[in-house]
Each structure stands twice: as structure tokens, then as C-alpha cells.
Image 1 (tube, rainbow, N blue to C red):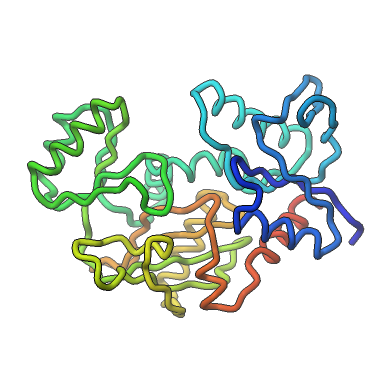
Image 2 (image 1 turned 180 degrees about the horizontal axis):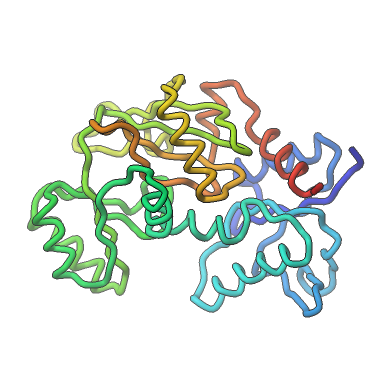
Length: 298
């Protein structure tokens, strides 16, 4: 296949491990990689896209989105609309703009999955502190999470009512949405399944770190241990269906082993894969780029 030009959307650090590996995979396959930040791109109607002051990038064949970055409501709205404008101009965006936005929003993810019969935890989402407290009283052990977040950062497990109340009151006073989720009985691990183009390419267990009292998160970034696993058909099917429902070209899906079977916690629109590559030996970046090339050729 002839050389093509692909945008890679980053925000703060173009040398981020995942971003850098995607750029290297593109170049290794003979393509041109054009890294850029969405705040540095402007649009004109009819469709024309300019990077910084004068570089026309309307000729790119596809865009791989790693992040839309931080910003005000207007800035985030503009960046999502910009990605949709790129799609309307015939430029393939991966993951697609709507799918990316929905997967970044835990609330939207869970409602979409629940609608299609995928098991998800009982969860309260809202801005009413008293209603959130009532939910905790009924459920008991809960985790309070940011509505939008990654790597388990900012999540608080509060097993006692008073501590839970204080945490939620503080979040409420900051003007943040309350996202409160039941803790489901499970082993001291969870599952990360990685799906690309409707195929599960690999999966691993992530175990709670040893020697950290009170730690309950399994994120490898936070010290959790990764171990290769082969999923039972029920779990593999659940991971693939989750990617299909959310229309994600590639995704890392977090699954817990509940007493009733697989339960989806979230699907990541821009997952990392360093631990997965280490335990499986798979060149994940190369497979992601292959998917981008395939989709942008249609």
C-alpha cells in the first residue's frame, strides 16, 4: 500500500509512551505521522483544516485520537465538533468522535451497555448530595469516582458512612458531579481485555498490589501486577460486545468477575497497553495502526 498521512492527536506530551509507539508504528509501515494538539487546529467552512497559523492539513487520510485534552466547556465542545467536522470531510477519525466522547464519560458508557443487556454495577450519578447519601445507605460499600478519569486516579473507596459523606460533600462543594458505584464481591483482581476491530487480541489479570494496606485498585500504573490469562468464552464475548455497542475501533475493557458473571466497569477510548504488550508479546501499536489504515481506506 502507498504511503499515507495520519494525524496523531496528543495534548501535553508528544513523547508519551503510547503516542510515541503509534507514531513509530506508522513510520515503520511507511506512512507519514503528523502529531498535533486539537487547540492548535482551526477549521473553516467549507472544510479546510489548518495547523497553527498556515499549515493546511486537510489532506490527511485519517486521525488517531489519544486525547482531547483539558479545557473549558466551550473548548471541549469545539474540539469534539472539530473531530466530527473531520469525519464529515471524509477523514476517518479513530476512535470516532461520538464513540470517544461516550467512552470517556462513565455515565454514558454504563447506560449504553445496560440498555443492551451488559451487566454493570449499580451506580448513582447526579448533583443531589442527599440523593447520593440515600443511595449509599441502601448499597453500603461504595467507590466514589470522577465522572471522567483514567488509571483509577481520584477514585475513593469509602466503606464507612461518615467518610463517604465527607468525600461526597467535598466533591459536591467543588461543583463536581457525584458518581458513586457499588463495590461488587470479586477476587483480588480484575480483567483488562483489549479489543481491536471486533477481535479480542489479548487479556490479562490485574492484581491488587502487595504490601499496600487498604489498597483496592488494580491499575498496573499504580503498582498492580499483570498476568496473562485466557478468558472463558462468556468473558471474551462480553468484551467484544462492549466494543461493538460503543463502536470503538480499539479499546481496553475493564471487567470484574462478579458472582453472576462478567460485569463491565468501563471501556477506555484511549487505553495504554504497555503491561499487555509485556505479558502477551503482542505489538499492539502495530495492530492499532493496521486498523486505522484499513478504516481510512474505505
